[in-house]
Image (cartoon, rainbow, N blue to C red):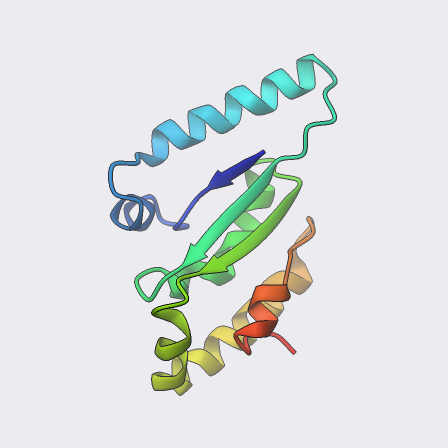
Length: 124
């Protein structure tokens, strides 16, 4: 089961995911996690972060957030119409992001899907 969380900071999530409230998302995650435990369900919980220029700086914090919230793995997506251009036109930010993402993924206690990050040149 996928939960879309588009910011580590609740304000970012709410700005990117218009109409969403982080507090409601967190309550839903808690309910699903509790039901999964109570029913001994094999349900896999995945946290998904869609990168856009307005939240990409928070991407390195997402694996830790996913782990804290009890997810089984973390995945990244991106806005194809904006993120590749943003990374090409902001090379210093892309370089710092690459370093911070690598460190965050290395430290993550849960699996992180990196194929889209590799495609964007944010991982080796």
